[in-house]
Amino acid sequence: MNAPFARLILVGLSVAALIGCQSPGASAQTRSETFDSKGTKIRYLIAGTGEPLVLLHGWQGEASTWGPGTRQNPKLSPPPGMQVIAIDLRGHGLSDKPHNPASYGSEMAADVVRLLDHLKIEKAHIVGYSMGSYVAGKVVDLAPERVKSVVYGGSAPVLDIREVKGFSEADAFADAAEKGKMGEYLRERTPAGMPKPSEADAEKFAAQLYGHQDVRALGAAGRSFGQLEVKADRLAQLTTPTLFLYGSKEGPYILARIAEARSVLPNAEFKTIEGKDHMTTLIDPSFGRSIVEFVGRHSK
Image (cartoon, rainbow, N blue to C red):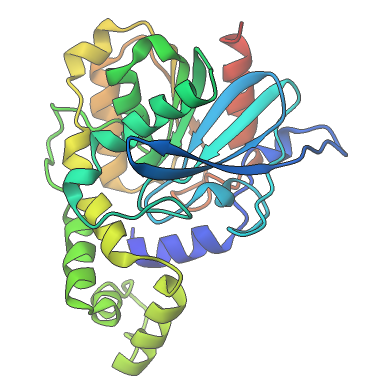
């Protein structure tokens, strides 16, 4: 997968995975709030009432991409009987954006637990997508007693047994961000079969794609992915209901990480969305339906 181009399409679409699960005409007011997470401001969205469902976005995404709204005017449409909470993970959206990788990693997962404390929620269902699955895995590791169920969308937790230890794409992005060479970064990652843009066009494209982002903060977050590692033996010992939900056309890297998880989590459920890849899985109606059905089985 050519990640920069995939992210452009993914963020440009309304990633309203759960909206298709609602009854026609269902609506709820979306509140945008912030709280202090040990000195870091974290923004979150909240809508609906009922079973708490926390949504964790992917790298370079944000909470508003779980609905049809925008960063400044977000809109979530929770399924009936659910309270949907979407967080801007630190470094993203309207949350604070430190530039030190040490400020990320497990702190992103700790932010989720602190948010539950802030909202006085004892236990919640956790859904992550892509990087959000890394964070979700660390939440389960740090505070399994706070998690009713977990859905790993389009990825897997960062297991200590994984064959590929590094995160080369994130490191390359961080290097480019630190050097101010985002256009060059995009040129080097032009998908096979597509003409490589000129330097000028690549710079314009980079400005469109990243102009509203703090790329150094995103790079710092990416450099911290290894800090989200969890021990496979520990996850295997936990009884947290677990679903892996991903497209049949995911890239080899992600499929390999999911296969590793399958080998150590025999009680987890695995569901494939046929014909979908990392970009299109999120916007397929069966993605949302699968989450609602799974959460419904593990509620109350």
